[in-house]
Image (cartoon, rainbow, N blue to C red; front, side, top):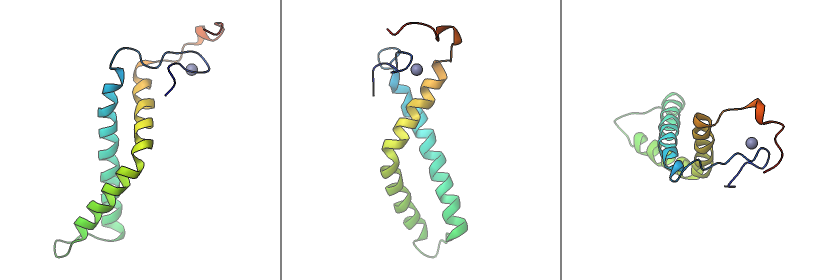
Amino acid sequence: MPERCPVCAQKFELEQGFWFGTGYVSYALSVALSVATLVAYWVLIGISWQDNSIFIWLGINGALLVVLQPWLMRVSRVIYLYFFVYYDESTEDLPEK
Ligand SMILES: [Zn+2]
């Protein structure tokens, strides 16, 4: 992760430990993704208490979350940064820092 935006030189880590909060965003994304895969699995394959289908979903979902972790981490940082940094038109003509 670069220290500053290559285009506008916006500092990314606004304060010490700023990225700590992305854990909560990442958690929310992971839960949303898990609910989505559960619903998709339920509709497409079906879940029954008489077999191990819930554990098969659990395994698939766990593997999917591990594989998607690098992407989830980056998306979380982008979403978290959007909470705190706004587009400011007046800084557009500033010289490069
Ligand atoms: Zn920028």
